[in-house]
Image: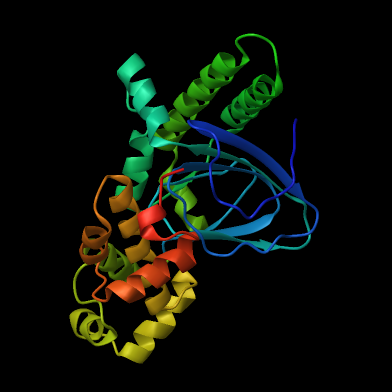
Length: 283
């Protein structure tokens, strides 16, 4: 199978999808990040716990994780085993194209996973083998210069998405034993995501959830990996970015995502995404 060097850059350069198969003998350090597209993370080997939106998933070879354009996530990679994975990035336009052609929304499993706040898929052995075979075919087609190779890569990817979608709905509840979570923190994360433009001060959260602000802060950092302030700022910036992608003005994106200070918003946006909001264009 084709393998490449790991890159911390989380930006698509291709229009519809990108396929990355990476391998590391030494665990790379990956910061919390997000990106303006869908991601399928197909875990092949390593000693990895993956944190997504306050839940930590202890991964087994063959596991799949689904993330969308609002999810903050990071793998914690320990030494002892080579870290190997296949990552597929998918633009909104790719799913729209498939929906127009086939009349099926293959992004539905991403939407369902986000609504349930549960991103792990654990296919059985037969499906893992089938998914690996499709990945080999995708990679071969993408590296080929023969006529029709791009169409063939898209066809294999479409079949891969169908298999992932079916595996998602067939995954048993028993795999939740490999998920570390805290129900109160889950409620706080949900509240933040549903009230980004509202009062998310520590004192307000303390009152709303009947927790001391010191205990709340410690628990939040323990389960999400980020301080409460860091998480809220990142989520507001993601919301602002997604508003800009949908055509909102910079001022509307600022206010609707919960920023009260325009100057601070501009600085935070450039620090997070490397561009000013007025110069931001979706990948």
